[in-house]
Amino acid sequence: MVLTKTSAAVKSRVQKELEEQLNGAGIDVIEPSLVARAAFSELFAYGGDLTAMMNDPEMVTGGKVDKALANAQAFTEAVYERLK
Picture 1 (cartoon, rainbow, N blue to C red):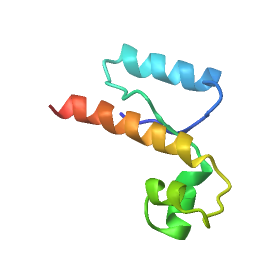
Picture 2 (picture 1 turned 60 degrees about the vertical axis):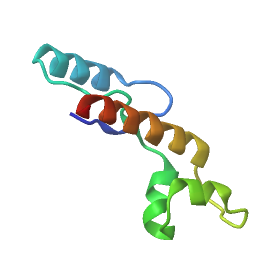
Picture 3 (picture 1 turned 180 degrees about the vertical axis):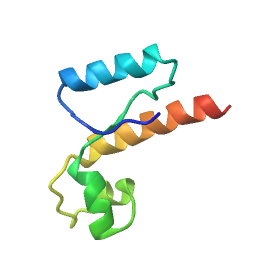
């Protein structure tokens, strides 16, 4: 199971309870979740990828592209580990 659009700051009480229920039911929840970041949304508006957005000096975004890239990389590694 993949949780998306989660809080970047802290896990909400509802998210914690949901994760506990899923884990209690034996459902594999991939950690880290995909955090709600403006940079992810901006991919649809500007195209390209996070690395290109971060390296383009003319790109003005409303989000922290470096944080989104780190989240995407950690998520990708977690998925890869499950598929090995």
